[in-house]
Image (tube, rainbow, N blue to C red; front, side, top):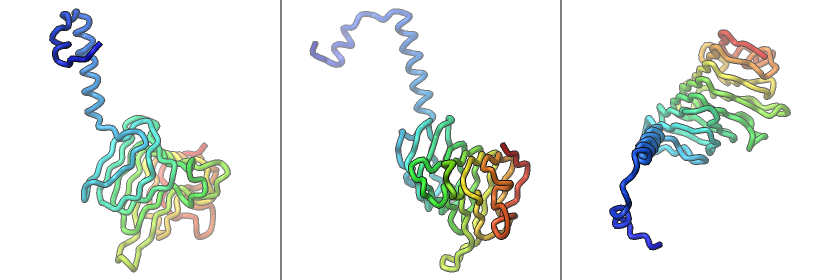
Length: 212
């Protein structure tokens, strides 16, 4: 039947009460979903603003990011938002409730690299490496003479670390007070979340870590 647009709508019979209620419910649900402003599945986290970019993520895999702008916020709105290739954070940032893994890049030296002079927070995130991997999870850079930056700083709150190599969080600057792990879960098999011994050990400050 040809579609005559508005004329078809005008000629439609009156809706029943049940149909009106169904339409109202569908419209309310659609409005709620739109209000979440979720990034489409597989999309890249493009930096459109000079500062303060924000992304809300769904239960999906997203493209790896390499960010430069300050004060970005990445938030997993529901469980399952994931990055499966190495990501880089070169501007102050906060990351909530997402998973970083090496599922598509098993040879990655780390899952996340925090650039020089950056302050980053990771809250309720999961860092997961393949059981055969010897790589680290996060690399936190030291001061750079080239850019005149300071040592990076980071805090991990309520995060989970699974498998990986003998160093989980590599704090290159080695000042333990600048990298904090608070209430995290250590599933790496290592006694600490930084290194197991020697220069790799005691590079971060751990408070309330539990292991499995």
